Length: 340
Image (cartoon, rainbow, N blue to C red; front, side, top):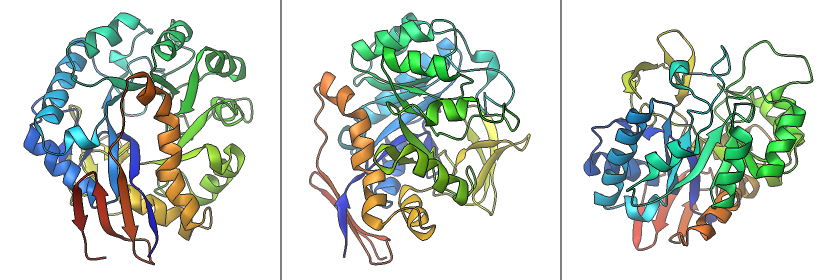
């Protein structure tokens, strides 16, 4: 049976009926979500908070941090957080399900305000490189050991290159957070795809990106720079139905998609072990390559931030069936066995 390092999800907004953006989240809620994530092979994750107004961001991060601190699994599995927004592009198509009215120019003091009094750091910030102040904020954040990622952005080739010069190192869910109509070739997708200093996260659910398109994107970015992420929300590992995510109503459909009432995608219901199986089944990667994209490559992306903050991850390990279903997961002394 194959064995891999524990999987690492860099973008997860909720799981198993629990919304990490809910200001009422409890330690018990978080443990329920993390227990369900262990069953998918995930041993470490960056709980992700999306765009909101400043006071809402402070409230949501404090609630999430208290839940992590008070939970059994949180201190083992959650080394820090991912802030996706609010320094994103509010134009139609680019903002996705993020509320455009809460988006702002890049302000370092907002990061400081949100992070104040948290027990663990914000390790990653996703922004749009073309926003006012984004270049300066990228350098400021990179200089203090945070990973700066680009997403929900219309940045062109020059803007992406300048941001990479300033410390940008990752594309958040590359291929998504983009409008249906863009310039044919000189566009934000190719600007990020062609920048070799950027690693890239991909949502391999067959819904956000067609499998053949995903194969092309990973081939262009390079397997060594490609990472599997879920962008999972509250409806992941949960039944078909209606849920509340970051203050909005979303519906999980039978096809696995999660959508706003307007019909737009609102994160995913993807499981990271499912993403591993998908890229293998679609002929994009071997099992070992898929494991690496969901573990080693994700770790490489955040390693500078972990080092800067003096964080050492607990050892994680996953045992798989020959059909690539999780049989056993271990993180530190916490071990779980499953019927595959």
